Length: 98
Length: 200
Image (tube, rainbow over the protein chains, first blue to last red):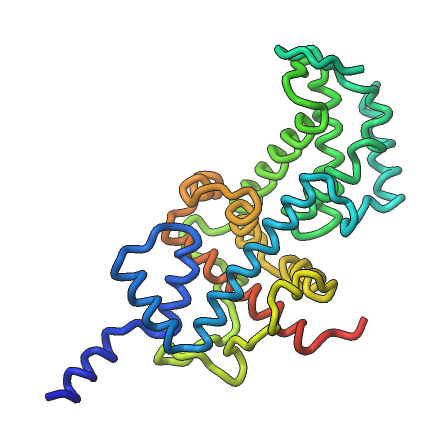
C-alpha cells in the first residue's frame, strides 16, 4: 500500500525538466501556490535544479546591474565605437544634413 | 546652451558634435540589447539620422541624451519586430527548437553533459571577472534572433510578458517556452566557457 502511495507521489511530482520550466516562468509571471510549493520542495532535494535557479537569478542580476551602471554613466568597463564606425556614422550624419 | 526652466526650453546642441558627445553611450546602450556590434553601430547611425530629421520637433522637455536614447529604443524595437516577423507565427523554427540534450526521457538532468555545476564559492566575485562578462556577451550572441529579442525585452527593458508578446506577436505560452530555452542555453553556454575557456 505504501509503495503504491510513494509510486503515485513520484509520478505526480514534477521532473527536473518541468521544474526548470517553472523556475524560468517564475521570472516572468506569478506561479500558483501549488506550483511554488512543488518547485520549492523539489529544489530542496535536487542540487542541480537548485544551482539552475541560482544561476538564472545571477544572470538576471548581472545584466540589470550592468544596464544600471551604464545608465548611471559608468564607462569604466564599457566598449566604445571603433574609430572606423565613428567615422562612418559621422559621415552619414553630415551627408544626411544636405 | 540649455536653460533649466520647466516646460522645455532646452535646445539641441550642434549635430556636428552629436557623435562625439553621445556616440559611445548610444553604442553601449545598443550593444547591451543586441547580439553584435555591427547591428548596434547601424542602429546608432539610424538613430542620429532620425534625430536629425526630427530635430525641429524636439520640445526640450527631456535632455538631449534622453531624447536620443528614446529614439534608439524605438529603432531597437522596430528591429526586434522585423526579426520576429521572419519567424513562424506559432511554434518555433529549427534554431529555436534545437537545444542540447539537457534532460533524459524521464525528465531528469543528463548529469554528465548538462547538469549544472557550482560556478563559484562566492557568486558576487564572479561578477567582477572579465571571463564571466566575456562569456555572457559571447553566449548572448549565439542565441537565435527572436529568442535574443524576447530575452532582451524581458531582461534589459523589463517589459512585462504581455508587452513582449504584443511586440513580437507570440502567445504567452510560446514566449515562456522561448525564454526558458534562452535561459537554459545561456546558462549552459556560460558554464561551458567558464570551465573550458577557449584559447583566443
